Image (cartoon, rainbow, N blue to C red; front, side):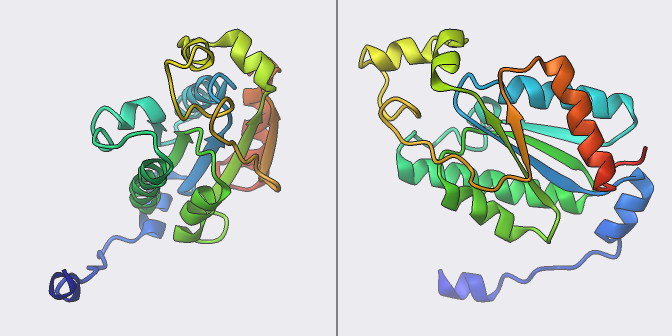
Length: 201
């Protein structure tokens, strides 16, 4: 393995991230939505992507369930595999940022160390943590996939918020009240992205 690693060399491209950002007309960045299952992070990320797309922003949404259909289909929900799941997503997101895209991710990503691992892979300002802060009671009442019911019945193990820990972000770039309407939250997020000069007015 060491010999193989020594023979792997990163090849810089003639077209840079700055070149791609100029062509897109906006910065490349990762918008990392984190929160409990049922917090509304996937719904909000999807709505924001639609709003960005309508403004001509080049985007891609990485969803937790979708990546487990392919990229991470070999992983379980153990703590070790969850870390690997986030590591792989972080690597993909980094490549997409290099392509000048606004990358939206919707992952529970329950551990602070995993989220910080992704942040560390990116340049300053390229990782924006968005904490969709929704009370467990609200998430459980929503239970769109019926997962909380299964977890409470003991049919689903290692479920975040029930028998597996969720470490809430201490200083996220954006702190969202997950009980607000998505129609109210999307304009707020767009305003923040404009303030940070990630997208143009």
